Every structure is written in structure tokens, then in C-alpha cells.
Image (tube, rainbow, N blue to C red):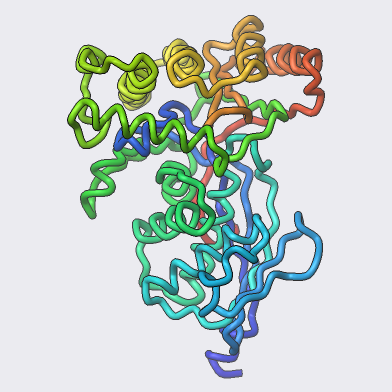
Length: 381
């Protein structure tokens, strides 16, 4: 078998993780700071090349015939593509748009990142596709471009107005570390913009619980896009390029619209919280010290950014009342998951308290797992 025949017929396997954001929600598309970790839940992609021009995508979570389209018609026939398939096909289309030859591909997906839980299942799907297509067809593509390809697929092909947080976390995170990402510096330079900060809660007798409430959300819906538009309007009213340029809440005094003021205040104070949490972890202090900052972040998301829900609020309240050092909603909001920083010895108590509270609200399908800082995307290990 020739090397080309082997590359066409051999299936290989890649994986890309979901993420939780320790702190830093809705700051990425405002050129701000974020602090995510990759989680031990991932989307896998089994892929190989074909000698034709058809891209075939299938998913074990979406039984049925594979979706098949010629590479050259991916953009023209986008509206005919089923919703889930737009994510991987959008990635292939973006590679092609940038001049990378993809030829025929067969991509089969599986995974355990729950959809709609605020854990970036869609970014994991895009990033699993991106690393597979890169390794199969365009090995010269660097991580920064790969992140931008995955983001562009969600923004332009799917129509979900996400920032780069989720894709950067899925690609760049490393085991045992939180990723401190300065979005503006990352976008504008080729060598700086992020830092790997050691993140080992077990050594301090702590756990970070992720509790999926069972209340799903969807980024392509209107709420997330509306918040982006409000942030852009606030920046324009203040005469700055982005809300990153406002260093303190006092700099928002000229905002007379009360809604825009609250949206901007969340972004400004959230950037401060990200820097404070990163400095605490970087300096080796007791991680329990970041708990109040997590809780303050939830209050800001609830009151100023107005993306929490009664279900998320109840889960946070139950976690804090049962011993969590801090808790908050994660992700874009309007449903999804919370995180809770807890002592290892008290984790079961917190988990059960939240479960009972949610069950009493009709959400008896909640589930909990531990967020351990995990590796980013690449060949499946």
C-alpha cells in the first residue's frame, strides 16, 4: 500500500474536550480576560480521507444516514444541512475558504459533553473536527489559526455569535493547569496572550464540582446575541473600541442608558475578578480564597448581565448553603450548569443538596461530575 493509499483508507481518532470557565463570562468578545480549564468530557472524531470530493459526517448521538456534501458546495447548500452537522461541515468549509485542500473526508463523531449544559459541546465538536482535518489535510496550520477556523465555523456557518474562549480552551488547555487568556493580546500578537497557571485542587483537599441543572440553552438563540449587541453599543457610547478599554466602573459614568450601564459594569468587574483569581492561583495561595470571587461573579451575571435563571440561582444558593466556598453559573447563561468549589470531604453533601433543590423545581435529571484540569485537543489518548 502506498503512503497516499494508507492516508486515504486508514481511520484515525482525535478528541477535543469541553470546558468550564473558572471565571470570566462574556468577557472574551469584549477583548477581556478569561480563565478556563478543559474538562474530562470530550467529543471524539474518527476520520480518514477519501479519493473523491465528498465530505461525510455522522454522529452516534444522531442515528441515521451520514450527511454527504461535495466540498465545493458546502457554503452554497448550508441551509440544507441538519443543525448538528453544520458545526463539522462549517469547519471543513472554513479550511477550504482559506485555501487548504481538503478533498474527500469521512468523519464520525461520538462524545459525552452534554449539549446545552454550558460546557462548550459545540466548540468541542468544532475543535475535534479542526484537529482531525488539520492532521489529515493541512498539517502546517498552527494552533492560533485552528482556533480561528473553529470560531469562524460557529460564527459564520452555524450563526452562533460566540467569542474565542471556548475554542481556545479546547485547543490550548493542558492537564493540571488553568488557561489565563488575554483575548486582545492573543488576537493581536503571534507569541503572547496566554499563560498556563497550575491548578491542582486535590492537593488542597478541594474539588470543583460541575452540576448540570438539566435546563438547556442554545447559543444560536437571541439572548446571547442580544448581550453582545448591548456590549458593543455600550462601547460605542463610551467612545472606546471595546469594554476592555474601561479599567474601572468609574469609567462608565457617561453611560446614561441603565441597561447598557449594567451590561458594561459586569464586563469591567468580571475582568477584575479574572485577574484576581489568576493572581491568587499564580501566587500559590489557598484556592479557597477564590470562592467569594466566584460567588460575586454569579451575582454580577444574575443582576447586571441578566443571563442567569431561577434554576441556576437555586442551584448556586443550595451549593453555598451546604458548604461551598463559592459557586456560580458557567457558560453563556439562560440555562446550563453551575460550578461549586467545595472541600473533598463535603462534596457529597453539596451535590445532594443541589440535587434535592433542583428536583423540587422539576429538574430531577441533574447530574454532577468533578472538573479536573484536562488536556486540550489532539490525537485521542
